[in-house]
Length: 139
Length: 139
Image (cartoon, rainbow over all chains, first blue to last red; front, side, top):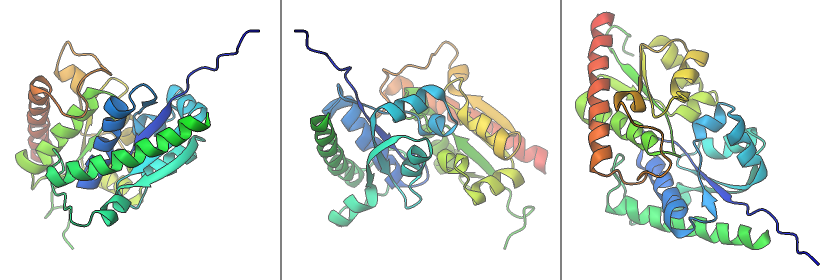
């Protein structure tokens, strides 16, 4: 009897695109740490602006895969836009929550993260990985 | 409150481009303009917030000149600005500035290497030049 092999799905990690403050950069850095290093075979990211613009490939991607939104500010553009696109939003993470758990860290640099920013991105990446593993375990 | 005449600012709208290295280059170039090359003459706007209906962002882009900085030929920033606020005063695309580049998903998106940093500086200088031109026309 043949075993049906289900297509390998990926978890889509979608960071906020915030450009004005360090938290936006932290959301992206954490995302890249997960998609490029920690879980590179099971995750990917996409351009949030392209998704918001209604790009068909991006819409299908978020609708057919579990998504994790990672937001840098209270406006939560990533979460809101995945929902608006009809995406399969499995989890929403906020940089501010990592900050609350690591109040000794004071990230300031925006363009290139300073030490505290990198530390916070690393803590956030761990949270994303934990969620990715949960989601992959459910599939 | 300052009038537009007193406070001449140019809005730099960068593509979010999380998926490819050119997106990172467009953001770093924008940050270089905002932080170093023309800090007193420019402001930035988060593209997904702008796309998702951020009132202040759209009003700013309607009332003030804008320069869009896109990573690839999908030109999300330019298209969005035209759709929601009006024609940008200038539009720059990283792949065009760099000539023979193409939108690669394999490049160092997280930490730009020397080649990509040089590209970001080149794009930033072009944006700064455009800022000067826009302000000169506005005078």
